[in-house]
Image (cartoon, rainbow, N blue to C red):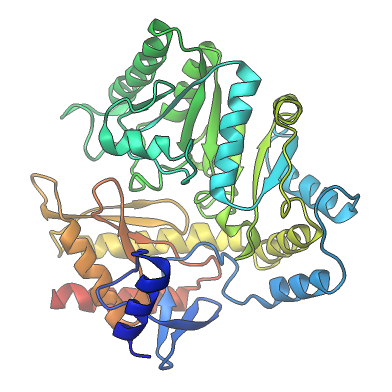
Length: 425
């Protein structure tokens, strides 16, 4: 089928589900950091963090096949595999996070975290940012809806301006003073809940504000925001679905952003493509959640999830992907900052670990976001055989987030092509 025919067929059976690129790519195979289309063209994957240890990773595939060929059942039977995996995963977190609930998607993990915060505190109110995305269930999606509408669409949710240094809350303010301005927004949300007799449950943020555009966060904001939330009786929830599993150059984004969460959601890269997510918290919070909900998930806490999750952790550790994420991310940002000097459209190069964001503008002095330009960059790079996309609160941040098995020779291929693209556009 031609691309046009396949798009028409897709719309008939799936509706207008979104696609990347002006001319979508028909991918049929993946290997490591490479993706191949139906005509055999090879693309360097600079976007997908789900296959964090590489597309079709043999260690993961073998673990999946072996476990599926032996046993896979729901969680109402005893199985040591899931306990071994849970303990190993929790050991990667701090001592305060000593219990876990498994699920199948980031949305499910976010839903569990919301319920866990509310049952654990007795509160209802949730604070998020004004560019949040944590999933698409009815309750979780309210955080995105309030972000887009900038209005109170549910009395239990409040959105604050996401903390950033590039477009600060007030021009000319920086450092601790800027941090305090954003903390004032957190306190204002807490006070607003109190004035409306809505007890606070917590604050829910991505540890590195990935959906917001990966901004540089004012120093100390996260830890001090957590203190304000705790003082008001709430818990602090870290969304690690994009930030976790060494993506940020640390095991967890909350380490990069220097704070200690009460609840952590995990997903995307946990199963390298197998649906697997989790929520880590204290034993007390998990016990409260379980006693109030009697939570059960047919496909979660399964031997298959445990086997695949273990294989992902093995691959990360065997290939030292934590170290390479930090080193290659620094290398990419350094080289892109060199290119920034000859391209006025690149207003800022930022990020952490193997996660890079380029702020694309039409006027650097006015900081005018250029979403169309970012889209043009993504399409131009796709034609050259490199897959990336645009993201961020204004859709003008070029998002670079390859699988963790990405190597320096891959980085050099990308940087050469990106430099050529800048000259062409």
